[in-house]
Image (tube, rainbow, N blue to C red; front, top):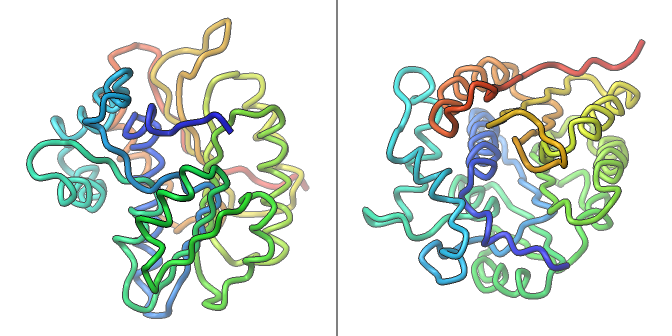
Length: 282
């Protein structure tokens, strides 16, 4: 319960996960039927990058600030534009605020879509209630997302996205993610799921992804971007997302996007990316 996302808001990992979030919601919008976004670890919703605390370790300078200063062109630029437009709309010419995933999702909802958000940390939950608690389109819950998610499924809209973005401050987080997906998928097999994970300990990441082969769940996409080679002792070197039931074009889109992002975020020879399907074991 000591995690404070303010110190990481807008860093390269946030940028990557939020671009994926926007791409998935964009495709949900293509059908007229309503959908629901469920965010299990929602955080405070918005972060003040100009605050004294944020400036102590301004990771956003190497993330969103770099991307805004060097927006990609071509196909990658077209795909990233809805995300960058949202960030720029929140800031009047100077980057001072960065939205968390619940605010990004809220800005993209249509009048008949809905958002359910969960946050266990009391301070973050209070901030989230202050930000979105009076919104009729949003349900804010001060709950443990791991424990509370199954009761929220399936959503009455029967369409939607579940975002699981835990802080990874406790041991066993990888196992909890896999277990949550298996349980949630039984309740809502047609839903899209986006599960974020850090690239820090390469052996742990390989073991984590191996578990998905045994779930029997098809249509699982693993998307990873790394800024440097793994190191010993382990430290964060990249960001990953497991996407279940992704839009059929998402892999190709992320290939374009990640190829453009890597040189923006890193000049290391070892930087790179990988988008690959995880197929269930026969």
